[in-house]
Image 1: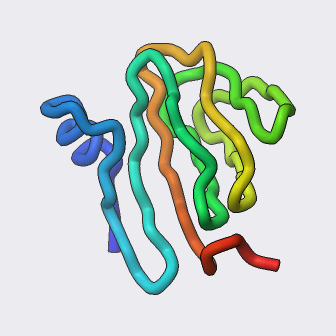
Image 2: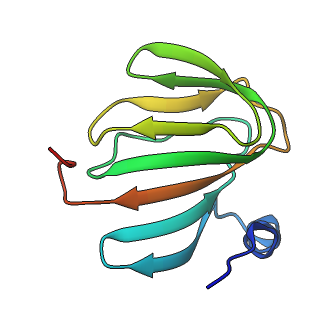
Amino acid sequence: MKVNPQNALKQLAKGKELFATVFEHGTLAVEVYKPKKVDLQEPHIRDEVYIVIAGTGEFLNDGVRTNFMPGDFLFVPAGVVHRFENFTDDFATWVLFYGPEGGEK
């Protein structure tokens, strides 16, 4: 199955939603996430991976700040405080949630 982020981004541009689920199978859920100006995420109950589609900015992950750009792969264990900051208006990212609640051990 091929999933194109452009279709999800068009869907997000039409409404007030910040994410669109584009695929689910077993414990895997794939979304496209496009926050508007501020990322208000709370820690999640499952492990997650971000793969940046577009834009640049800073990623705060468990107190560690790093710069990101398209193509970057960012991992966040379940329950960890994280957010995107100082990102450009075109910022969008794939989000992959997987595994059991509480994260993989």
